Image (cartoon, rainbow, N blue to C red; front, side, top):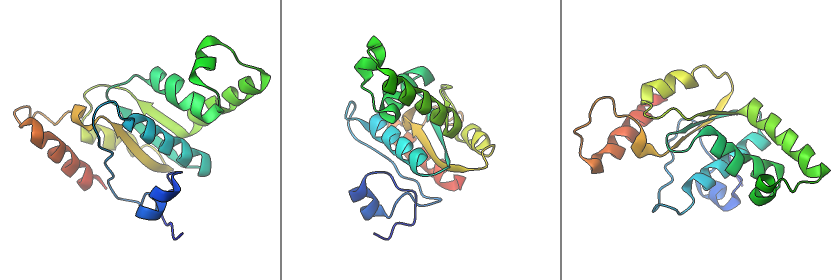
Amino acid sequence: MDTRGLLTGFPSQDDLISGLMPGQLYVIASRPGMGKTSFALNICKNVTMTTEKTVAIFSLEQEHGRLVNNYLLPSIAHVTHESLNEGKLNAEDLRNIKAAKGNIEKHIFIDDTPSRTVPEMMAQCRSFEDLGLVIIDYLQLVHNGGQSRIEKKRIIGVITQSLKKWQ
């Protein structure tokens, strides 16, 4: 495999796109409830587990605690969401959770501020020396800089155009 970008942790995807290439914009799209957030957070986990890069997540729909407790912590610690919520954890699980929390704190930045604009996200990302990946969960909720009259079907185009200029 000739992968030059960050590995997603999904080998067939990495083969197809040669990993996540610097300066590229990738959009995960599907119907509601199909697992877009889970997929993106699995990529986040895989990037942070295989590199020393920081991943910035701008979650415009879900709050920080929900992302960590429902997705990242169980996935990184290799425990089930149910066992974590119900407190059914053994000593090894607790060690794994502690290590996972350390990894999240060190490598994953989560901003759950609603109605962020692309320039605000860009400014935040400039503060990271080792930024490897930016995930924006729910593009349609990115504030479009006062262009509230844009037709709904054009909003994603305007937002992705702004993100593409970001590099």
